[in-house]
Amino acid sequence: MITTAVTTKRLTFEEYLAYNDGTDTRYELVSGELVPMSLGSGKHGAVMHFLEQTYNLEIARLARDWIALKALVGVRSPRGGRWDTSRIPDVVVIPMSQWRELRNREAVIELNEAPPLLVVEVVSESTKTADYRAKRVEYNVRDIPEYWIVDLLNNKITVFSLVEELYEPVEFTGSDRIVSGTFPELELTVDRVLAAGE
Image (cartoon, rainbow, N blue to C red):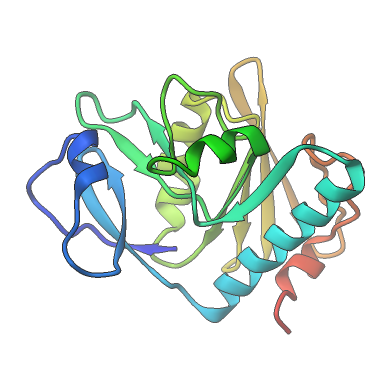
């Protein structure tokens, strides 16, 4: 998703959850500042949709009680000192039990709750720094086991795996099969992901 800061007044996490500007704009909270999320390119959306479907097919094949969701679940991070951060990943994989709990309240995974199993960010020109730097730190701090960065600008996918509390990156390009700890049997290449929607 494409993001740009919009406010100068910092909000608490509670104020963020209650915030309503009367529009359909969705916001992330970054160190207490509201950041609107725009749609991104059609390619961006096609990749999100493809990965959501691909993960859900693999989840069904493995008979796991998980679900993949695109841009529906926030992940709260303590990063930012007294000002919270809450990101909305492009795709998230969580247990169904957690999704059922989120249906009855704001769909944000709190600091005291189990982290997602996997998150994905699809890089846009305006989000590349945040995707590679800030979000990497935030997701690492939350102990999310696996973080994919799908880089449409450089035609590569980087999979960060949590190893002894730190992310270890592995880059995949072209016809490389993407190696995933969450989905170890997944037969998926970078080319196939990048061709989503074509």
